[in-house]
Length: 229
Image (cartoon, rainbow, N blue to C red; front, top):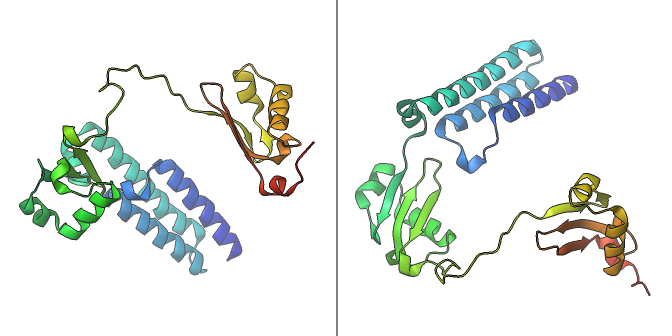
């Protein structure tokens, strides 16, 4: 049973990776059904010791193949995509709740209000459009006079903001990232010591943003050490 568990675990993990990266909340109805069936087949393959292992693996990867095939077909065909994933539904338009669409989607008012609050919207009158996506997620577009002011609204230039580059992860230095930034370990060690830490081993996470600002977060053990100097 231990052997079967390890094999099935690796197989299911491989199957999920093959199917691609999608959050649970973004799964279509078809993806969700495939995931449930794979989980059920995996459990049966582990529990039923009389069942040959390959007879449990074949249906799992058959489902993976079908999922990939239908995903590819849906990319090429709008009709198939609509059939499999459905279409988004507008449930609020210009501050007015579309009751007919709510009934059609079997989406109650409490769910709508709850998801609006999760988006930081307390007043439905502030909503230009609210769209119920095929994943069940609610997308909200506020009216123009209720949206947060941006730099472009004020006519101000927006500085470039790239992703910070990780330099230390759990005490381990990312040498490739250092080289890409034309920096070296000596510079990093000096910066770590400036922050009052003994070495890079005391750093839980460190990154450098596009403005050259170094972010350091020390480990709990490092916090307990007496301050240097």
